[in-house]
Length: 175
Image (cartoon, rainbow, N blue to C red):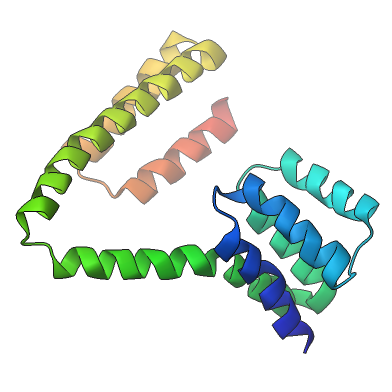
């Protein structure tokens, strides 16, 4: 029964909490503190503070922790699944609709508009990363990493996962 309660405690906020993690936090608090009484308000506040201190989405971090405390490893898995399930279900439905109407002129026009927008957003993100790298590591390290990444990805056609792993190893050793 605890696993069903864990699922509901995180699935319901995921469905009705429009706006991502910060919008679902009060809903999760209601479920965890008031409905199931797994935590006191103070303890929930500490979990929230810890979750904010760690990188990544806040709702999944809180779900993993609370699910683990209440139901062990299986409870953590169920809570994490319940947190991402609403988005997953909606994405599957929307993608199936998109595939169903992929030959529609309106869908083709939408895709033609979205692709360049995504390319621009990725370009801006890349420039911000390069700027941060320059500020933190200097011009030599930044140019080396950009050049090595370009060479390995575009010229040598090495899989991106290996390039990322190599960059992480390089950063761990030299930076």
